Length: 228
Image (spheres, rainbow, N blue to C red):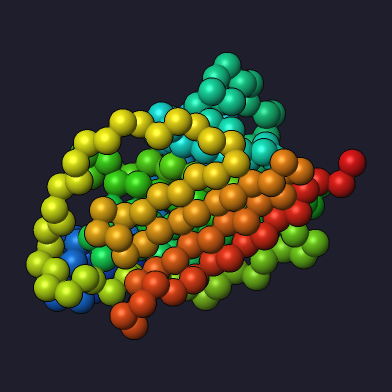
């Protein structure tokens, strides 16, 4: 998908009342268009400032990525030189929690020499209302993904009685980094993600969304270790 078409799709989402910042009874404060805008800005920053510079600037302090084993992104990226040419990418889908505190994007990327694949990014809303990513993964595919006619957005069902407010979670000590497992969930519990990494580097990445009164799996990705 070209950048003009992608931007047009994002602007269309921004103009859609059901996806606006204004709360409605079904979607609460979810704002998929803001997450799509964050993903597009991330991709644009990579082209303008450099690939790893963009990754550092948009990740939370405890974000994780896979190289191919799970690593703390900021540590792995520290001092890493940008490649001469950054990959390009475009979001195709977005899933958002009812309260908008967590979202997951999926899309396509393109690298040099015709190599392409898919990516999945978990986005967390920060105190200032902006989004930063907490997990990012991507793999090459034998064939490029077909671009959708429109970016598809899905918002989780809200908890019973939800009126736009979620009880504050008690402060808990930071969870020590475990390279074999990481999980996360939205503040309202309507969107969650879980990744398990085997010693070989194989991993399983699962995303669930509250839909129809139950947690429904919307992504179940299994990545095999790289052949040596």
